[in-house]
Image (cartoon, rainbow, N blue to C red; front, side):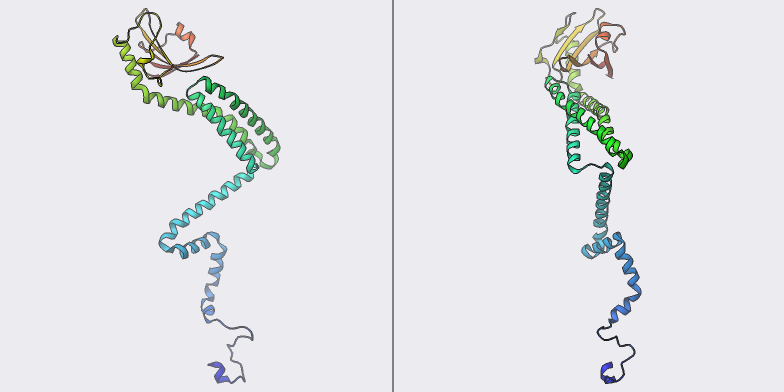
Length: 277
C-alpha cells in the first residue's frame, strides 16, 4: 500500500534498507529477545522448554526430572573417572578381580569346605596382585589425583573386614532360618528318642538333614550336661573347623577341655554357641 501511494519518488520513513525486509512480528516480540537469549544460554531452562514442546506441560516435569538426574549422574561419573586417573580397561580389570576375590572369600566364610579352600588359592593370588598394583598406582597418581589415588588400595584393604561382616551376617540369618530343625534334633536327643552314652558318639545322618551339619556328635558329661556338636564346615590342611554347639548348662566352663579346644567362641542364642578351631 505504501509503495502504491508514494509512486517511488520519496521512500517512506519506515521503509527498510534495500535488500532487507522488515518483520512486524519481530518488532512486536523484540522486548522478549533478552528472555529468549537467557533461556537458550541456560542448559536446564532450554531442556525444560524442549520437554514442554515434546511432551506437553503435564508430563514434562516428570520426564525432565529424570533427564536432569541422569545428566547429573553422568557428570559425577565423569568427574570420578578423571580423579581416579584409570583407563576404562584398567577399571574393568580391577573391579572384575575385586568382585571375584570378594565372592571367593565370602563363599568360604559362609560355609568352609575343601573345594572352597582350594578356590582361595587363586583368589588369594589375585587379591595380592591387585594390592601391589594399587600401591603402584598410589605412587604414580599421587601428584595428579592426591587422595583419590588411595581409593583402589583402600578398597582392597577394606575388602576383608567387609567380607567377614557380610559372611557372618548371612550365616547367622541362615542359622536362624534353620533353627527350628536344630532344636527339633536336640529335643529328640534330650527325650531319649536318640540314645546317648556318656562318651562322645556320632549321630546317624538319617536323623537330620545334611544342610544342618556335615556330622553331629553328642556327649553327656558326668555332671549330666548334654553337649551336641554340629560340624557346620571344615577345610584343610591345615585343619579348620566351624561348629554350632548346644550346651544344656548354657555356658562353656573356663579352663575346661571344651574351652581349651575351641579358641573362637561366640554365643549366638541361649545355650547355643558358634566355635572354631
